[in-house]
Image (cartoon, rainbow, N blue to C red; front, side, top):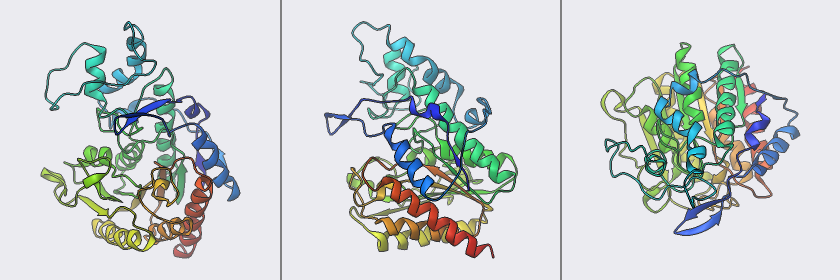
Length: 346
């Protein structure tokens, strides 16, 4: 297994976001990278830079209108007298088929679901290279490797085809899955983040060619609030190709594992021949968000269960925020995956 990561992913450095109406320091900071790299280094994993596959694999998931917005909105925003240092919306449309304004303020509201994804001068550049890391990880699997870890930062699973949200701008997990699909594979996504992967669900909700599974804290009183319920099963051709497994706030290893086992059985029944794991280390009991209580050894158990499928696997980094155990939690997951995968492969 290799770690795929580009140094320019550090350049996005958001300062603030709104939570419960209060201005707070943004936890999705470049320092996350150092903690995660340290965890991988303890396993002796090599770090390689992704290839530049240009915009095509990103545009396979995201609309050209949205990509134009991401590339240009910061410069446009700075021309507004009295505008904030970072692009943060103050108005949102009540529906997706509303009029599309020429105003930078209006477009920010249209393309950003919430106030936790501020855009600065380097946001597009860092998000671009995070997406390229996911593409290169998928390419390693397509070429015959059995596993790859994409250290994607900023993360991606809250990003819809034309909307940013929840610290996310480009949906790295969906981009990796689509890359596999375009090369003749049948991917399943298993999201094990604290928060529901609402953007990933939105990308594939009307499709039957990619299975999406998410284990997460119940959204009734938790972000992302409007998505992640068990009754969301897909629509149209995608009916039955989405499985949400919400668990109670504060749940620990046993509850998480029980839900995960249901999701992994669905992967088997789907007939997937490649697995994309959206890895959220924020399910940890000591994570700043504090929504679930997975332990450090629990991440090894989650990884072993995923490896038990015996499938080539792309691991895409999603959440997991600065705490003393962040690197150790990644080490636990990747180490547990490699140990279990070697046994399954014998």
